[in-house]
Image 1 (tube, rainbow, N blue to C red):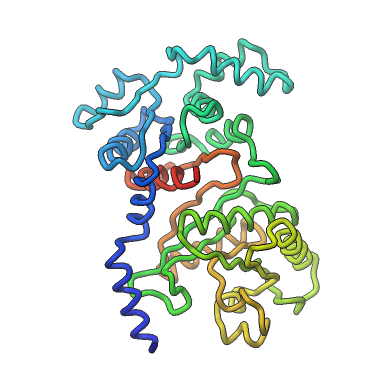
Image 2 (cartoon, rainbow, N blue to C red):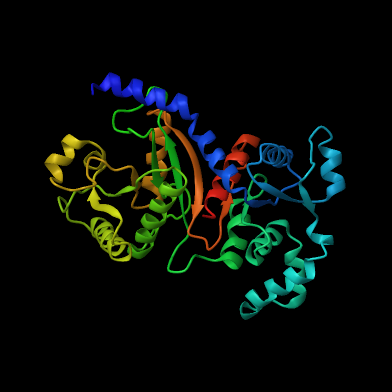
Length: 347
């Protein structure tokens, strides 16, 4: 099929199935999970809660003072949304005891645990830990540290995962891109960990492949990126990526993963034929693992600003249960998308 015909075919597929975000929301509707939103004091969060409820994307628990939330949002329909004030909740003592048991070895007292459990993000994380909700979204008006700290202290990492990481879903611009037949790619880590050990980078690759499959619907082909392809350069930074690739293959033997690869060798078939002949991923990768946060953050912003890609994320992964951080500049629609993605991470 000629390139222009491929673009037309891609355009038809996009028109038939709706946008990537709509696909994600529709998938979330099919499983209808319960998600806690920790920032009822923020109007964007309240609006997003109403949208998620109205469209049946998820069942919502909204944390905050009910009277204040309703007074500050008189035109928002809050029917069928559970609103809980952590400070007056009849579950506060139960959650405070759970927090105390989790943190007493670190020196936390029962009194400190009860006071900490009144914090909305900690309360939400305790709800998640107890299994009373399926996922958590916060960060619209709090820092990343405020969201991740209770995640790391209460939810912790999934079994066998050495580090929490993040990924961005990169959606190709209208009209498509000849190297992106599915219309979407996944980049990691672009927003969380500044540096990785080889094992941490391997865990990031495995987690990102899972996210690419469950959230983006991709058959993941993972490229471990470097400034070298298959030993073309010698350096400690190259050695890190090579070792991470080896560990990932050992931990996930069925995963399609190759490294180390330069970006062009990972995505351009003609370059791959020269630099990595016969490799099953080279030239066809759709999941890209950057060697550190500097490279990942620069890479996704180049794709976004010069390539016209839409970047969705960063989205957290590697926690034992789904927990996601928002940008403080987010809109209500961004929060709705984060809720839908968090719901899909429960699978």
